[in-house]
Image 1 (cartoon, rainbow, N blue to C red):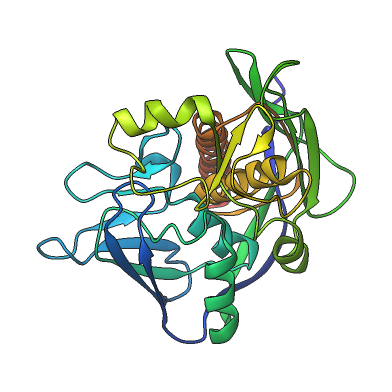
Image 2: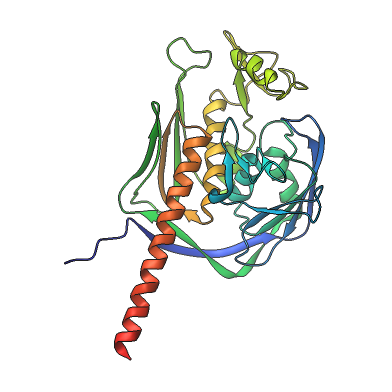
Length: 309
């Protein structure tokens, strides 16, 4: 009986990278409104991205991996209530977009600084520090057939592509009478394109959503000048940086959430109305498939060696 083909495979490798020096970023958290500081530190090869809550006893650590996601309501949260970190997607998107693979993130609160709701501040801080290559490789995984996650009329999937690298397309659709016009955006994911096309794109909400967030104690300190709030006539007290800034920001979020795979991706990510819940489900599904593939290959090698002996 022929062996079942693995749905994912490694399509290549690149050198791992880390920061050239420590980086500090300070600001106010979007969720709590409290002052918070993060310090990004270089980390050894194969260590990945790790958050450490320095405001908690013994500075408990939470790996930036899909298996450690505990909440995806309007943002991505890693770890438990006692020492978790929320709204991690913008910082993770920055590291992924700039190809910083190994990094320790010391944080003295439950969320990174919100800055202006985009990744631009983190990009600027890391650019001033720089990055270095490390003596280890990072696998680039692709799919042989589409891997798609769907729920409640939304969908996201990674599709095979004949072109190398990763492409992300997002279709934002609030409906015919929605406060934000229907828009699409596609990004070829490379550091230069990430910085130029999506890093400065801000998080956004509709005017109708603001009251619900405030009732949960979220963002009460923010005004419509601090992030994009869409009313019937467009942004309130604010100006778009791109005509399709919301769709671009959704691509930013996807990059941050898919960074939780722990490896690079190749192919075409296509998303329709997807949010953090579906993004993270796709990341976890791909990580699980890759882990299963690695274990399968390891068993085959072990069997071959035993037969040869």
